[in-house]
Image 1 (cartoon, rainbow, N blue to C red):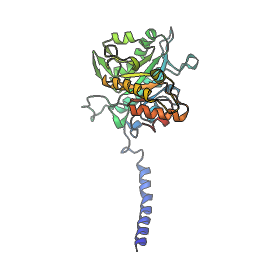
Image 2 (tube, rainbow, N blue to C red; image 1 turned 60 degrees about the horizontal axis):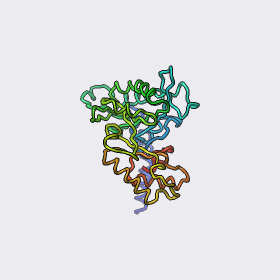
Image 3 (spheres, rainbow, N blue to C red; image 1 turned 90 degrees about the horizontal axis):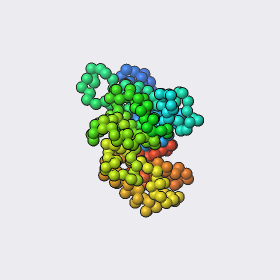
Image 4 (cartoon, one colour; image 1 turned 120 degrees about the horizontal axis):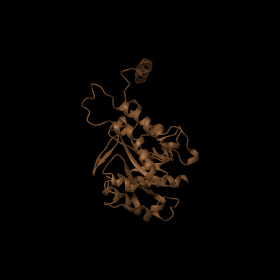
Length: 304
């Protein structure tokens, strides 16, 4: 008797599965299931930094598909040209790959869709970010300046104006930070002296995690502190990851940064051999480092 009842239930379930499957196909893409912020509605945020993001087949969007909160673009500027180009070295540059085309224009489209102007949003007090599942999360855009910083940075500022004009960039006024959907972090040859001279600005500096102090590197100058893991530990990293002494040294730096209100990131993490890389990923997360610097986003997303 029990077998007959179970069989009947199974048959009933199989019979009902066909209509619901058809209904799902019918409803998918209908007005009731579409949202203006559809792009990332099934993506959950992860503390990952997309190293050399522009190298990916689809820059920015690949990172967003994994919920990555930080992306990096290497930028170049040349005399007599107002354009800011993106690439790893000069031989990789071309007219189509610019800061505007790869990052600013797509972000404008994404944020326009995420912040519709209609009768339902009239009381909205702050803009939504790129992640629908965490609309208050800012996206960190690291701009790694490869050419002369003092000559290049003004063109970076100009390129960022569309995002600034819409109120979509994190800003600082004196010591007060107002977070927006996108936070610009200048690194590489970004001119530190120029950045700190601007009391009202819409960009920040990438603080040196190995030499932080409250006077030169407060949170309103650099909300993130970074450094080469290899240089920080000074001694060679073994096949099993950080030694006890190296672990304590890295943790001390991370704790110090956190006490200052800063997030942390370590680059130059050995990626080979695989067991060594995996051990380092686990140790950095255990220590509490905030952004896992990664080239392989699919792999990194399994750790965070």
